[in-house]
Length: 259
Image 1 (cartoon, one colour):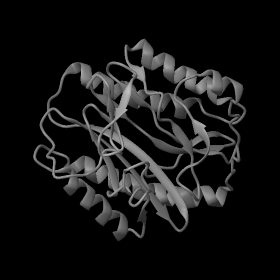
Image 2 (cartoon, one colour):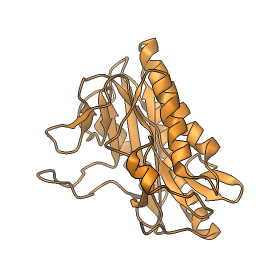
Image 3 (tube, helix red, strand yellow):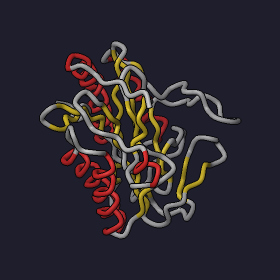
Image 4 (cartoon, one colour):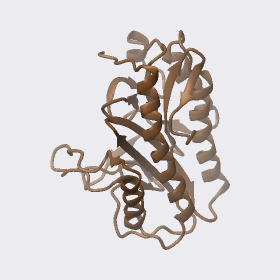
């Protein structure tokens, strides 16, 4: 792995990008309501990002196979969709959960975060899913500090999620981030033989995008026909939260919380 540590000044530059990410996610949280289309959410995200001097990180990212470049500023995934949903004319309905993933580049540095929003009234089970996923991210933020191996954090996240009766997505994980959206290392939210073999020692200057994705039912996922959207194989809901966090001598500093 070619891990690139960041200086305090570079981390502060990333925090500036993270402030735009938070501004956009907070704004979308304010306007998400039954009847709004995911295309309208996307347009507002791009407008606000550009108005604040940022560049939308996801727009134009090359696709794999037959999938073309990603067309949206945001990834917006509803209900059973896990990640990478494409904005469209589809309307949000009462009872939906809407996961929005958004990234910004500002002056050559990146910020990336995600949040799952509950629209109107939904079941207690789905509300608990969203709460547990949010808490899994909070566990990572609270635990991460220089000198600790990431497997300890991933094990705590996985144990908590599975203890609540949910499953942690395996196919998609967090990542290093800096002057590029995706850098080394890969940052899983679960423990595997591969992680044990090539564990990540947390040290000051390491910046990670930590993003637990949690399913109500089976851990299995599938890619839909558009070549981008990933959904649960059993069509049960999924939730997604993410922060960009920097390791400092005093522990983890969240760069996408608006501070």
